[in-house]
Every structure is written in C-alpha cells, then in structure tokens.
Amino acid sequence: MIIILKEGFKPGMPEMEQLEKVAMRYPDLKLSPHNVKGAIETISEVYVFGPTTQVPLEAFDELPFVEKVFRVNSKYKIIGRHEGQTEVGGFDYNGVRFDQDNLNVFAGLCAVDTREHVEMMLKGLKEVGLQTTRMGAYKPRTSPYDFQGHGAKCLPYVFELAGKYGIKVIAMEITHESQLTEISYALEQSGNPTGVMVQIGTRNAQNFELLKHVGAQQEFPVLFKRGMGITLEESLNACEYIASNGNHNIIFCLRGMKTNLGDPHRNLVDFAHVPVVKRQTRLPVCIDPSHSVGKKVMAPDGLLDIQHAAAQGIIAGANMILADFHPKPEAALCDGPQALLMRELEHFLEDIAITREAYLKRRQEAKRFAESQG
Ligand code: PEP
Ligand code: MN
Image 1: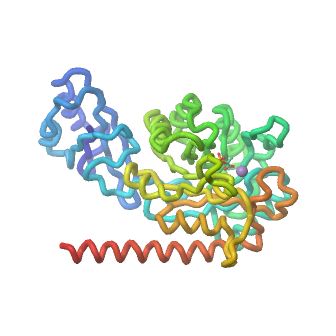
Image 2: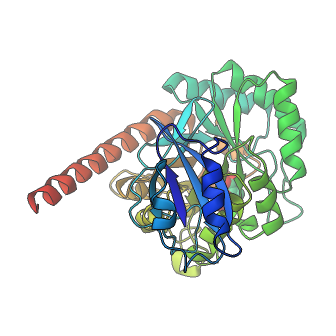
Image 3: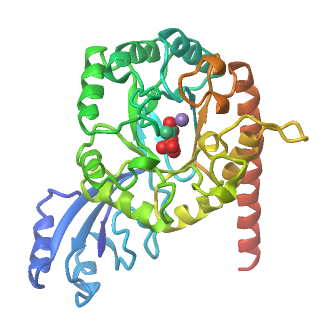
C-alpha cells in the first residue's frame, strides 16, 4: 500500500503520528516514508509494508493530509507503476534531469585507456554541447587476460578533465562496492568537478550483495543494465533490490540479450521492451545500441546498424542513450570494433534528434486520437 501525502506535508511532521496510530490498529504493519523529487514538486509517499490485504484504503484515506492511497498489487513495490499512478517519476542529479519524458545522450569511451584519449573525447563532447558521458574504469572482462581497466588510478585525470570540459555526469561501471569509496574519494580530492552515475553491468545484474550496497548509498544514482540471459521480470526484481535498500535514483538500461538468434549482432536487440519497462515501472529507460549491436557495420541505406538500433529505442520512447565512441578505435583496449569516431558524433546526434522529434509527434497523434474518442 502507498499513501501519497498532500502538498506541504512531509515525513517527520507531527501529523505523521496519526499515520502510525492507524497502522498500529493492524498487526505487523511497517511504515516507510520517501520523498519523490519530480521536475516541479516533491511528492512525499509513505509505503505500508506487511499484511495489508485486510486494511481498508479508507483507514488512511480519511486523514486530512492524505491525498491518495493505492493498493500495490505489483511485486515491484517501490519502482513499480501502480494503478492510478501517471507521474513520470525520475530525479535530478548534478543539474541534469532524468525521467520518463526526456532524453539524455551519454557518448563516451567504453574503457578509459589513455589521458590523451579521454581529453580528445571530452573536448569533442563539449564542442557539440553534451554534458554527459560514459567512461569505464573498472571493466568486467570475459577473459582474465584482457585489459581489466585502469581502476582508481585513472580517476583523478578523468574527473579533472571532466571538470575542464563541463561534463556533469559520467556513467561508470563498478564491479565491487569498494569502488564506491574509491570514486567518492577521487571526486572529493579533485574538488567534485563532475558527478558519477554508477553502472551495474549485465554480468552483475543478479549480484545481490552489490545491488544492496549501491542501494544503501544515496551519493550516486544507479544505471542498471538488464541481465543478458535472464527475464525482464528478474532484472526488474534486481532493481527493486536497489530501491528497497533506499536508493530510488535508478535508470533501467536495455542492452540486448545473449542468444545466437541475434547473430550477426553481438546481442539480440530488445528495445521493443522500452514501453514495457515504462508501463511497469516509473524508472527512466536507457538503451545501449553499442553493446547490443557490437560492431560498426552499415546498411545499404547509409546508416550504421548501431544508428538503426538507437532509432528503434528512441522511437519507442527511450530516455537515455549509452553509446561507445573513441578517437582511435583501432587503439582502444576494449570494444574498439563497436566504437564510433569523433567526427561521426554530430551526425549521430542529428539522427537521434530526427527520431526523437518523430517520437514526440507520435505522442501528440496518440493524444489527439484519445481525445477524439472522448
Ligand atoms: C559496458 O557498458 O561497458 C558494458 C560492459 O556493458 P554490459 O554490462 O551491458 O555488457
Ligand atoms: Mn564495452
């Protein structure tokens, strides 16, 4: 059960004692207050955990400071979109808005290799007006003999250069909770010139202890990548692990599924699931066309498969794009074959803008049609 409080009422106010009193009338109920920061206002919600089936909605609804009470029938208690909930959800982080209505492009290096390449990448982003990027420092690799990432060593120059080029958010995968402290320390040492969104990679999608750790901290938002070989439901449950530990600033990323049926692409593109995730949850949805397609190949129409995949996600309403670029893909230490060139960045963004416009027009048309039906 979720109780939405009227504007101006917040957890911690004396009125909340009345909620506690109502809860005490029923056995084993536990109240958990949360603030949901929207673009315009902050909504305060109180989750009621425990055996709520016998609790009538009116018990809470009749209190004067209660706006609405929902019965939560989905298993995604916190991330779920429950009956009657129409809000876009989302959050702000370091001056950047993330929700189910907008679109952010994170173009950058799959893995940090040299300071020079980081600088070329970030300079290129500034030139096109982007303030969000991806930079892998801790890389989970299939083979132990492959480049594992520079780890904490590269963080000082990555953060310094991010500050120099006005980058506000860097998506960065972590593979162990100790890396949260390393990132936090390096940010502080460099004077917090940028922000970090910690990424949980597909290989750690069901590493529940890691999920609990990223959930228990509030410093960094979390980009969760769908598990490559598990169901959507299992991946969403993994996100609920993060949320139920306290951190609700989560973005769900589709990155393709591992199956030979996707050949010759690296993974089978699953971007038709964008609307599914938006319907079942209030999480903004990211797509990663680079790791889905896995190679830089072009169709006879002059568009790269990666661009086509990106367009499929955007036309379906994606809110974030993660894309691999590299100033010298042939020298990249990780995923060079799927990296686009710096000179292709502007064209890539233009193609995205065209598709996004088409998506917004589709929404308008759907609204017009719904209104015409009365
Ligand atoms: C990545 O984004 O660098 C990555 C390793 O992705 P995934 O976890 O989706 O394979
Ligand atoms: Mn990669």
